[in-house]
Every structure is written in C-alpha cells, then in structure tokens.
Amino acid sequence: MTAPDRKKLAINQATTMTQWTLREAIEGYATKDIRGISVWRDKLAECGVDEAARILKDNNMTVTGLCRGGMFPANDDAGRQAALDDNHRAVDEAAAIGAQCLVMVCGGLPDGSKDMIDTRKQVADGLAAMLPYAIDAGVAVAIEPLHPMTAADRACVNTLEHALDLCDALGDGIGVAVDCYHVWWDPKLEEQIARAGNRILGFHVCDWLVPTVDLVWDRGMMGDGVIDIPRIRGWVENAGYRGFNEVEIFSERNWWKRDPTEVVDTCIDRYQHFV
Ligand code: ZN
Image 1: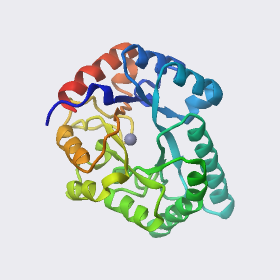
Image 2: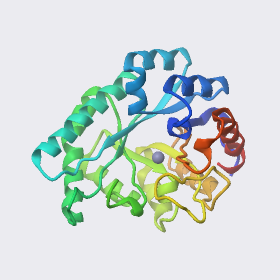
Image 3: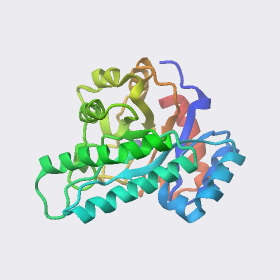
C-alpha cells in the first residue's frame, strides 16, 4: 500500500477526550492542519450546538461523524420510546453541525435479559423507526459493528456482515462505519468490505494491543499492536471509499494521560507509517 493521503487524516475527539474540550480539540487539530473531526455528543452539549457549529466552520473542519446514536433495546415500550427520542435528538445535532454521518452503537441486552435474538430484533426495529427522520434531516446513519466482546452491554451487531444485512433490509439512507479495532479479526472481512461498496460511511483506525487489559478503554496507537491497517484500508479503498481515515483511540492507561499535543503529533506520525 502507498501511504495514506495526509489530507484525509481525521481524529475522533475521543482520542483527546480527557484532555480537551470540543473547542480545544477543534483548534488543537486544526493547528496541525487536520481537517476532520468526529464529535461526541456530551462534549457537544457542553459547548452548545450553535457555538460548536461556528467553531467548526471557522476552522474549516469537516465533521466525519457524530458519536453516537443507537442503544435501542429496552425492557419496555417507555424505554424504547426514550431511546427513539434520543436518536431523533442525535439526528438534529448531526444535522446542525453538518456531520457526514451519525454513528450508531446499537445497544446490548436490556437489564436482566438473556434474549439476544429479541435484542437484535429490537435493534432492527429501532433503526427502522428512526431512519425516516434521519433521511428527512439529510443525515446518513452509520451502523458500527462492534467487537463481539461488547455484545452484552454495548452492541449486539458484531460483524460487518450482520450490519450489512440490516442495511439491505432497511434500504437507502443507512450504511456502515468500518472500525479496524472491532472487525480486524473477522475471516469474512475482505468479502464484506467489498460487499459494502459505497455504503461505507466512515473508516476508523487504531491498534489492538496484546494483551488488551480493558474491553473498551484500552485501544492502541497505530503501530503498537497487531492490526494490518494498510491492508484493511486497501480493501476499503477498493470498495470505493474516498472519505477520511479517522484515528479513534480510547486509552485510559496511556494516551489519555499524555499531553494532547503530543498525542496529536504521534497520530500524525503513525498515520503516515502504519495506516
Ligand atoms: Zn469507531
């Protein structure tokens, strides 16, 4: 693989989540000539949506995604309605800041449940219920399949194949976010990326550390782990994806403890060599 296009480097705000507010992240990335950012809703709320939209525009920043919608399954109708309402709010926020997609972490088992089949049905129903609202708002919905270790409590959509089956059933307006951390292990990855084609709405990169010490908060910097990211990027580009390559690192034991400018500099350096 040739080196990735430097202009397509984006950083997910979570990478400097503990160090920087949204404004600081936008300005901190822009200073290093990074023009793509994924935004988190809690940080967006803290900043204020209108103010955030202004800062993003002032810094010529593309919003590669808003994190996150989803979390559909619940034990009762009231819970499901609350989830749907929250997803509608997420769509409104994504539209207000011009996000290229709303990233969906679909949700896991409701409290006390062992019914994975019903949980997955609730996800399909939830997506179907919110999709018309997103289409009306002009917001693309991106299902992000998460690693199966998260099936109980975060997302019961665990493979790209499952995500694309949902997309097939739901039709236009919905696609997938391919996050290397979640899908790198999948023996069907190459064929499913090809199947995804123009439905790939985001491409997220980081590395899988060995050993991993936390199921969510122990992602590695590109180059520090075992994922062959350039190979996966090649598959994604062969499928037709031309969007940003977004660095997304949750790292309690390392990167969240560092100076954020150092984190960004390291992302830039590693991007050129390991993405
Ligand atoms: Zn991701």
